[in-house]
Image 1 (tube, rainbow, N blue to C red):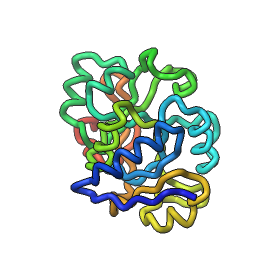
Image 2 (spheres, one colour):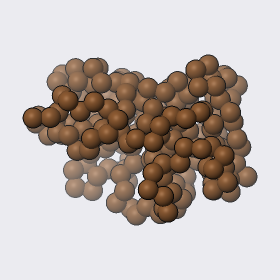
Image 3 (cartoon, one colour):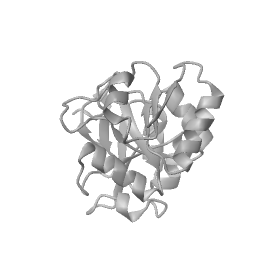
Length: 207
């Protein structure tokens, strides 16, 4: 049975944030809010937790997970960032964007795009999410909480509890956080290319 935390969206309770991080470090799968929607997350090195997330969402091995990072310096640990990319990321983070970058050797091979050795990364503008990342001191391996028979992410934590109580270790109720996907930018292209238009302003990438 999953634990269920009601965490204040603007003033997260430190005790609950610490416990959420303990659950991640113990190999758990959590449901947590971001600035675009709720997401499923686990620790990067936990292969069994990642497979549980694949099972929940019925994902094949070609699905690309995202590394949700605390800040730009953490992104730079896992992605190769040049000066041009750094300036753009400074402008757009934190925010509802996912950036596809060439990965560094810090990223496990099983997480990489099979052909391009690239990884998606993002820095959400959500207080609860950023508190967890600050306490965890490493990215969360993440994917949007969309169940196989749904077209949009779940938004009601009580509905999440009913659907996932036996399949995850923690569900965080952080209030409504949206259901629009992130804007995805391919930073391996020159110039950077808009892959998907979502919540983040895509004006900079339109011709």
